[in-house]
Image (cartoon, rainbow, N blue to C red; front, side):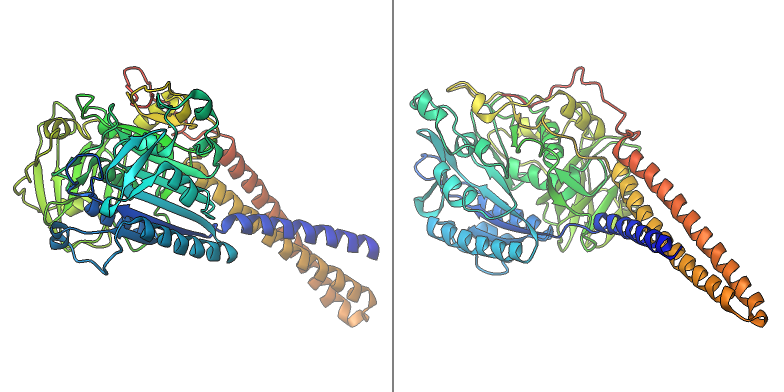
Length: 547
């Protein structure tokens, strides 16, 4: 009997330990550290074009968003007088030269190595704003003082040297396609193109986002006081692209958001098409995560009505823009400013609404309706110039974005490799590169079911251990009962029965918890959620997502 009890005790202990380990392991969040190098230059290089006006502003705003996400971020930029007059710099950043870029990369990668040695998962962001052009078999970006950063430099100095677990590359420059991947130029023989080692297909841990018109151009717009692409991508990262309310934005969500933002812009010279590349199966890779950030300023936009809003600082410099579908609620995150304004804009081409509200200083977690309660409509900030200003003013963000649009994009966008385009072919639409393969990210509802299931597994383990302790104590009490004198036997008998009941109740609770955990995990991993079951019809939906 003793040997049987010993074996049973060992089995129960092993089962309880396994249940606790499973529950604890999945309850723990993966520790992650973010690093970034942000580069901005207004210099036109040898393009013959005028210097840019806002690449320096974009770089400073881009690094601000990445730091809000918790990134250890370095910025290389020479701020012009106009930029210095609009914002105070915490410190003087280094100029965007090749020497400074190499030095900054060396420092950042050393810090990434240290974080990896400490057991962290690491991610690295490289974000450039400035002039670019196509040269030979690739492309170059222009740095300060006429320096250049070529496609070969990107692969040699950044992507092949980066020790990070995953790398993100965001490019806001003309001819970005030529910079990130060989475009099959006419002056490069096909055999050489096919043997090109500088290919995203050969680097399994990099994601890329850029945008351009059919001719490969990007635009600045005075209304945004920045590049159109950089502003839209910042809006997406500030959680405006989050369609499942999990406070995270993925590559696929960002692609859908940017596609919707540009869909109604008229004219191929003005409409920007978005290109997103991820490794196979990584379309659900997160690019911004606010789930653990409790200190940021947030505004909840409610479901029940469509809203096209643009949040600006008190000087009307835009911070974020979103045209929200009426079926969805969205939590957006805003950079900290001394004061804010809210512009309510037309939701579609038929809408004529314009309104502006001065909000003053804000902080904490806010609700949109409470935010505007009692405020008086003020003067609308005017749209300012650009060679494509009318097209941008009347077309940007005129398509409501939400879960239905996202599902339509995910269902209809086809996967095309960046290298599959014929030589010399212009960009006519965006592309989801490698986005079709691999599983989609689970919805927020499924993630909640899974977390609840793991908690139940942990509870089952705890109840099993409690039952085991009571059962062992009951056996010991029963042994004492058999050996006790007649005067003590009644008390020991009652004690043994109490411990038997406690053990039975604990084992029953453990079984109930285990059954509940099984049901929750099945629902979280197998059963489609109600939101997953809604597939928006893609009829009439023009997905700006192909080459």
